[in-house]
Image (tube, rainbow, N blue to C red):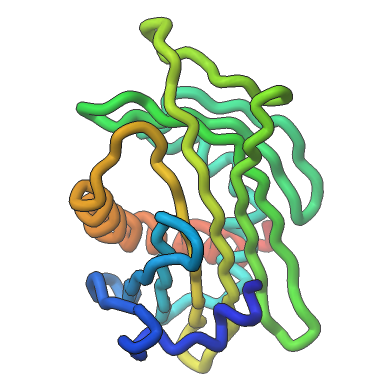
Length: 210
């Protein structure tokens, strides 16, 4: 599926892609598009990232420390590492939505290098309610299960690296599309400085030999 997505031209309006936003900050550019998914009410999002000053090695170290990054996020209210091995992690986390019910997700994350130099990252939510039942928030209320799939392919360039990312998610509960667009736009604005901070940290650790 990822290979076929990589061949899609997100500037082709005839295929249903629409531009949502493009933001550049701290030598990181994120160009975000969306289109309807076939046979589904969900939306497929596509982000082309251009990052200057950092190589994929810093991104790979970030992935290796993925569960630590989630755990330390101030917006995460609960976290549990379920499984961890080289190139793979499964974890549970719950996050707040401000004026809405908390969401949670069981996250299965895999990453690996390909022989052609590409670095692949696949993130999927695990929707086995028997194995991972719905939990309660701090007030004893059922949280809403968040579903997500994200596939990213990154490769070094002369100035840094480029990353093509595709993802879809279902916020669960009552979450209007207009709020989803606002959520995405706000998320991108927060993601760029956080990504730059993370890459700076992991590039420095690599330079130290860590």
